[in-house]
Image 1 (cartoon, one colour):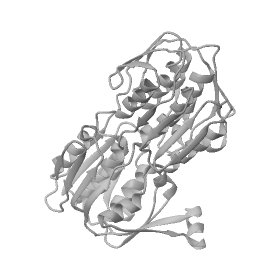
Image 2 (cartoon, one colour):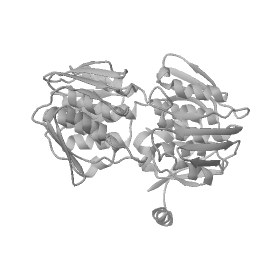
Image 3 (tube, one colour):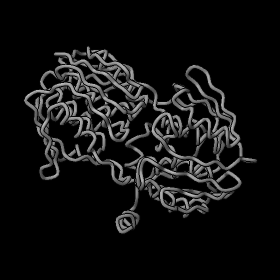
Image 4 (cartoon, helix red, strand yellow):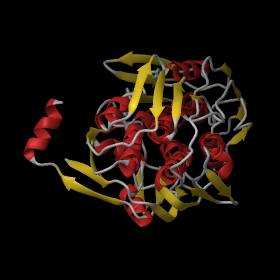
Length: 429
């Protein structure tokens, strides 16, 4: 087990390259199951979730190579092997295997997914979609069993806007007979990315990125080459870090329109941000920052994945800020850790109330989930003294080469192995 140490206070300057989108990658890789020949995906991030998915594809008979961000998947010899336990429980996005395997094999057995513990994240809308397409879905001993003689297109209205359900239904529907219409669909850029891959494979999809997606089923899909979009959440995290500690930080490989909700709030606080086609520049500052209120919403609203890093930055603003998360009710476990570092904040219902200005102090803290880890990294960069962060398995799930990128900007950051006493204290905490 390791801990991440950050000696706070160093100004950040320079250019950071943003990796491919984690939230796209975890759907694009299962989508390769649907093809009848090899699929190449370029620009994938080096994160543990990608390694887990690669292992799962190999487990069901796929041949996979992954070098320098390029994955080649040959799905020809894949079989509908049950995946009730093991690696499938390590990540939330394993549920995309349901839609892909159901689409190709008309059956699947997938263990209930794991990942970050952010409160209830039911898959009822996924199941509703599968059943509408003609599948029988049962929950047996902690695994989801999907069976269908054939899949037939249907009109599906999502009761809740869900990225996962939208993508999963797309995966199942592209090889179904006839037309499928998904209404109240999610609009995230990652959905457009998955639709682009599927279209390159031969699928007939219209409306991705709008609230109505139309799919005309085809008999087969073929291999192709696809380049993943940049990770807007990683980009947002580096924007926040640049705001907190940057002289001038340039983000390379970004799509600025994907980041408009976060750049609007940073400008409202008083930061200067400049954009070009695929780059953004943020100029950090310490004085005269204004508090802001943030409410997380589905895209194009403020992303729930960035509210945690923003709470750290808001300790610099003079006055009271309120951050409300309408997506996940349990996404405030990082607040107690920030309070260990001297932050003046509290949780009331679905909102965190932050009173600034406060100078954070280095402390021993623990990442409870992926984006809480990003929050604590930002806090560590801002703090006086050394911050020690444990729970790095969460951070490694979603941020590619994080320490190397921050070192390149001037941060003092390093990993150390935990000693026996620290491991015992962590296990007892």
